[in-house]
Amino acid sequence: MTDARERRDEKTSTSPAPGAEPAPPASSAVPLLEPREGIPPVTADPAALDRVVAAFAGGTGPVAVDAERASGYRYGQRAYLVQLRRQGSGTALIDPVACPDLTSLNAALGDAEWVLHAANQDLPCLDELGLHPARLFDTELAGRLAGFAKVGLGTMVEQVLGFLLEKGHSAVDWSTRPLPEPWLRYAALDVELLVDLRDALEDELGRQGKLEWAHQEFASIALAPPPARRTDPWRRTSGVHKVRRRRQLAAVRELWNTRDRIARQRDLSPGRVLPDAAIIAAAQAMPKDTAALQALPGWGQRMPRGRLEQWQGAVERARMLPEAGLPPATAAPTGPPPPRSWSEKDPQAAARLAAAKAAVAALAEERHLPAENLIAPDLVRRVAWAPPASANGAGIAEALDTLGARQWQVQLVAPVLAQAFTSPA
Image 1 (cartoon, rainbow, N blue to C red):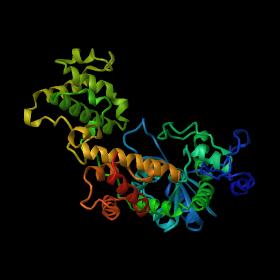
Image 2: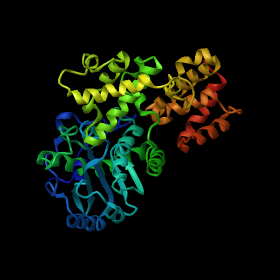
Image 3: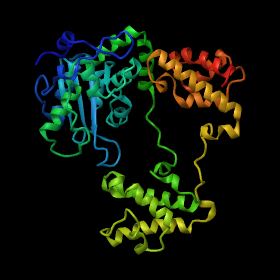
């Protein structure tokens, strides 16, 4: 197969920013059907892992990294396949079920730059295996900063490198063993061109004057701690906004916790144990017995009686809770109130927010990137709700910095927010 870098040089790399050359027509894209060195064997024992570690320790340059999970099938977000590729090392496919400790590989990679696509999705499950990047390059985030309208890996590879990636296996059950050969081919191809994509995007970001922005973003991701467990995760049950009474919310909580416990024990995705819609239906109805529960939408007629009694027990626990044990109607606030209530609570803050959103949107359009990547909307809301005493550029810059904005964001956004707050709509 022709090397991707050589093939890319024969084609036109693309970017939607002003002055960029147009993307090659879809008909000119070359289907990428096989990895350069073929599909590597799956690494599934200590001896094979030692060989992979030695190979990657001897490689050079950035390391392409990807992970496949079994979202929608298994409990949690653990990795069921880890893919890596490096110059001089080739491609490796590692089974983390058979090799759950990859700290030796992490040590072998040292301070090499990792190249990932949508790093925030993969880093938590890689961290569980002992893999932590010292430095990284996120090709999805780079595409956003460069102004690409679509930043999926397949679209980016096609637009930038002129290759077509087959993406048909992205949502399969990666906990399947043995993994079918077509899935392994797909997994190997996902890292085949990541470093080439990284190089092209680095060139484009440099051309647009955004490379330092990207470096700050990547450093922030690499240094971020693992995400903390959400407070009251049951409040994210789909449809919970329909539940108004506190005792009904208690039923949502009890049913959600029961489902989570069963899902963990059976290693199943919670939605496969019981759909959210069934939880909401039971919480709204507060059935008196298993017959009434089974008659509700989403519960069906085939559930074993013992399991029905388990769910009904959750409803009964909610019914018997004392008033003091019921959850509050809304989650404890962690920031400003919802913007829809600002006009009543604080009309001046509502005016500041409207002006700030318009100013940020205009600046994002001028800089050719999404407004949410220019500055997180939550930071804009927080500063608009409680602006610093000195709402000039310096005061707002300090506030944004305290809230965690990167320096490039502070430098660009603070002046326009100061202007917006001076002359709110």
